[in-house]
Length: 152
Image (cartoon, rainbow, N blue to C red; front, side):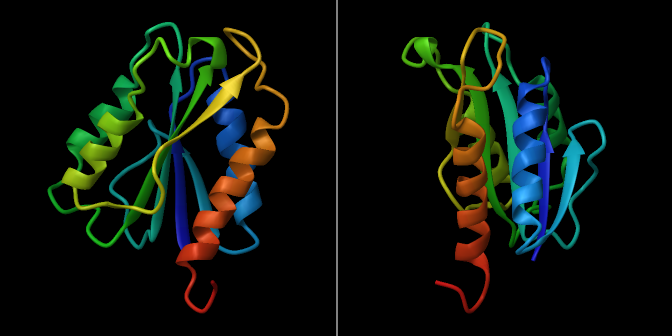
């Protein structure tokens, strides 16, 4: 299985989580870790995980621009999911852009492997809250295991 973990990071928290997820999945898949600026059109990818920051009313413009540049059908047959890093006390005050990104991935042919997931910061700018990196790694590994033929 070929996996891309693509992310946009402003303060380094999303990058830290994406790196941990990518490392955790290497036991079950070939994983490529990419910033959104490094990514081109996915070829031969079975699972695409997209990570974004969600803090201080920021928008994941680089990720949305990358998706919009993909040709129609570029993600046909690709499983996708989206994860975000956010500050937990603002959880109910902010609208998550993960669903918008997920819909954009689906419009390019992607199919959800798992619903979007939020992971939390201990403060407005970090660090990542205790246990969230482990939870993120478990979330990513579970997706790979669910999608690997012969595994249940």
